[in-house]
Image 1 (cartoon, rainbow over the protein chains, first blue to last red):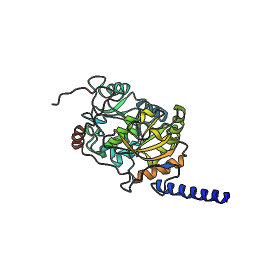
Image 2 (tube, chains in turn red, purple; image 1 turned 30 degrees about the vertical axis):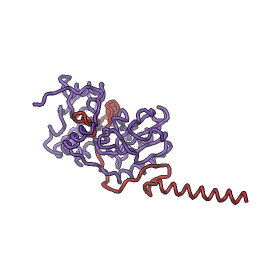
Image 3 (tube, each protein chain N blue to C red; image 1 turned 90 degrees about the vertical axis):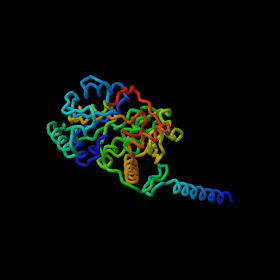
Image 4 (cartoon, chains in turn orange, cyan; image 1 turned 60 degrees about the vertical axis):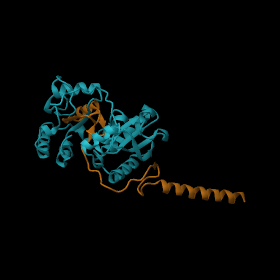
Length: 85
Length: 248
């Protein structure tokens, strides 16, 4: 009896875990080590310029590679309002 | 910021022969000093924007503007042509064939969230137990961030301090890699996905590739954004004072 009870608990636990995993999974391609909300399928991001965001990091990379530097500075706020260059 | 020059495909391709650095104006005193020296010869106030092509040691300005690249180039084709020409003068070292080891991150999470919002990109935040763990996790993520198919598609930041995560509801979720969608003003963010701190390069690659395909890049209208932000009290405090200028 005890072994049946344990077996049932194990089956219930496995089913519950599976249900939680399915409900929590945003997409089929998501790995089991992830969590989060779903994102709807919309515009794919296009490749962009790969910016170093810290001057020192970029300077070190230019020294390492011998590549010239494209340097840009921009204020991430307009009239004190953030979220817009 | 650039009237489309920096998002043009020919410019993006030409930029791969450069080390591209974009600092946030008014957000770091040392960088502000460099900006002033490089873009205006150490004279005058900081300006919101600036653009410069520099030699690999950062000492010789090949081309500069105290405003954006759109003040130099007539169009994206002209900019791409100059980038190719300049790159041709500086053949890369053999070591350039190896991928960079440094994660292209912003100096802190607060700034990274704002920059991600400005760019309309998702933010990846590395949250580790301590500096050593953060460094190890960042190194693993760096190998993914520099993949050709993921270049320029995410903004990155790293921290071991829970206090750095204000505005993002991830402080109580432990260590790991957090992919965040910034709000319109880059003052808060919503969790898209969390990956465990022990995620492999392959797990990270699969997740970021998947998110890049699904992420909806928002569009903003400049005037409308600023007007609505002011009304809603969405403000940003800079680290370096913004000079007061008279409009002409």
